Amino acid sequence: MLQLQEALAGHEVFYFCYEADTTRRLDKAYLVPNMAKNPIEFLKNLLRLHRIFWRERPDLIVSTGAEIAIPVILVGKLFRVPALYIECGAQVVRPSVTGRVMYWLADEFYVQWPELLQAYGPKARYSGSLIDESPIP
Amino acid sequence: MIYVTLGTMFLGFDRLVEAADAIAVDTGEQVIVQLGLSPRRPAHCAWFDFLPHASCLEIQRHARVIVGHAGIGTAMDALQVQRPFVIVPRLKRYNEHMNDHQMEIAEAVERRGWGRMVVDMAELPLACAVPPEVAEGYAPNKAPLLAAVRKMVDRVAEGR
Image 1 (cartoon, rainbow over the protein chains, first blue to last red):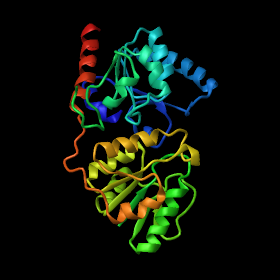
Image 2 (spheres, rainbow over the protein chains, first blue to last red):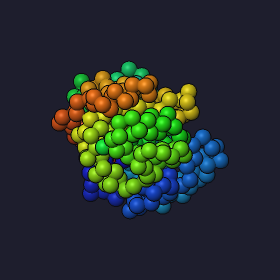
Image 3 (cartoon, rainbow over the protein chains, first blue to last red):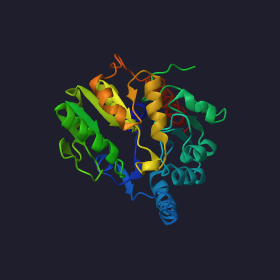
Image 4 (cartoon, each protein chain N blue to C red):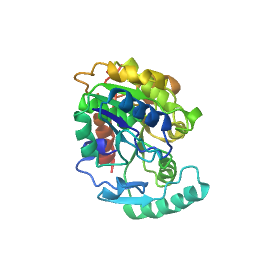
């Protein structure tokens, strides 16, 4: 996510992410416990995000996953906030579970390996990568 | 020096720690292991759990070979420092990861000619003795992805 920062320059940015040593260093971040597949944390996140969206009024959601992106985009739908999703670079051939959900919900959807395009529908695009050197087909 | 890195995964990777120990004993070469949360300590290697990212990169720049688990961050670091890279996927069947997506990453690294994949630890000593070639001039194709994000940001900003 931090490697995408320059594309967001000039705009006010806040993060919603898991508590970790790396995320505690972010300028403006809402940190929550790792929810993984815990349904209680998922519901708590929906409520937290509802309050956060009310306060922050974001204009755009940008996410590279993981599952924490799902409550964010759901609350985003409620507030009519568009979303751009970039599949994590760790998914080379097979999609992530989060990616499969985000494919249906995100307004723009990118993968970071051209190999992964065959696993998704026509909405998925390869437009460069933070990892791969492959040119755009 | 051989630098072995297990990333930040919460599961152990004993097979690689044992293999690193064996290489240190058999060759006498210095082996430094970044263990992360992997519980088993090597007996014959220098090791640490975590260091700041910049320090990890500094050690890797001095490595003759980098042996990394097949995490995407690990792969990106190894490619960035331009040292010979041997990539060893964590496997689900040994409870080293939740699934086998590290196989996909390791295979992609080998397919791109960025390093050599080792799945069977018996092959690791040879892969370290005769390391793969460095992916000279490795440069990820970042610009169009950043441009795509920027384009959507601008479009949203205009319509506000």
